[in-house]
Length: 205
Image (cartoon, rainbow, N blue to C red; front, top):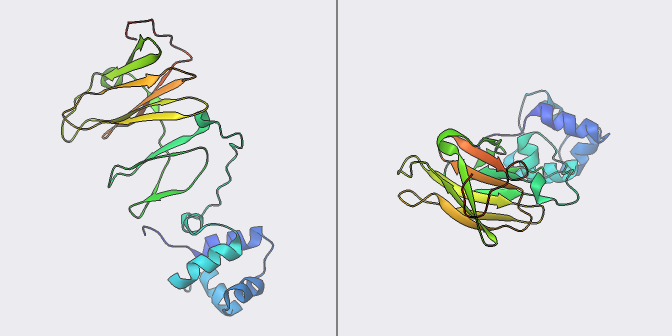
């Protein structure tokens, strides 16, 4: 766990629900003085109270620790509005349909913010029948490499995990794909939008 709930967070969430300190205390079987001490920074709720506290406030434990209630506005479940997360410890890749609090290896992960693919992170695309053949001219060394390539449509995400000393290449089904991503383990996420660029059959862009 890399952070703990603060008094200001408890107070903000309690007040947003129109709940008094006494009402919250009764839900947790503690005194109102205990809640007051938490909110004024004179103490912390015991770790055994985190789950019931989160339940009383109507959020998840991760949201409570993160200090923010997450509301997913992507109700149509359009994957083009999704977000990607990468754990710096284990390399786990997580994709969400919309707003979320993602935790891995005890770390709350920020959503990746893509940059335009250029330079050594340029994404090259060729059309091979009904597939995109995607390559990146980038070192694939032990400590510096492209970790994954991904193709995103409004219906699904196709992701190919890559490893050092291999090739930075992958094939993806073309159907409805609108964006391609490459993730460098040192420099982050890079984006190539197919809506702006139309690769020619058999050629690279």
